[in-house]
Image 1 (tube, one colour):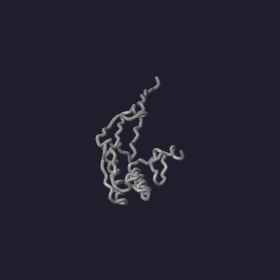
Image 2: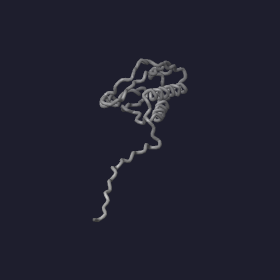
Image 3: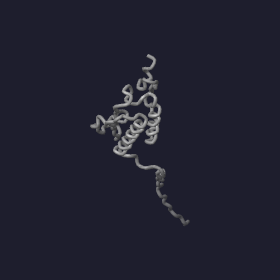
Image 4: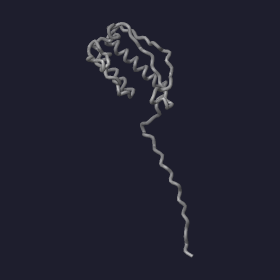
Length: 142
């Protein structure tokens, strides 16, 4: 009788992916709110350095987290609209920020947004003509 051995094969154990060395858990909604609030306040301070005399006030501060809109309404995500930070003083035509310094303020806003990894800074196309910064591109030329 020949000598035989029975070998049992161990089940394959899937390799676990190691997290990327620079990965960290996503920030909480509260942390994100605090970081964005600081960025908004930094932008206001920068605008004040260009246009002295503006005073800033938070309005509509009663906002609370709520469920996301579609298509994210099927997730556990939350949406939080920040209060408005409005100014008095400066150029009354454009919310205090004159056309002459608007490009500098816009660039600072984009830099602060990039620091928050928000690099798509123009969600709606706008026309940035002097005296008409807020008009949607679809309305331009009508």
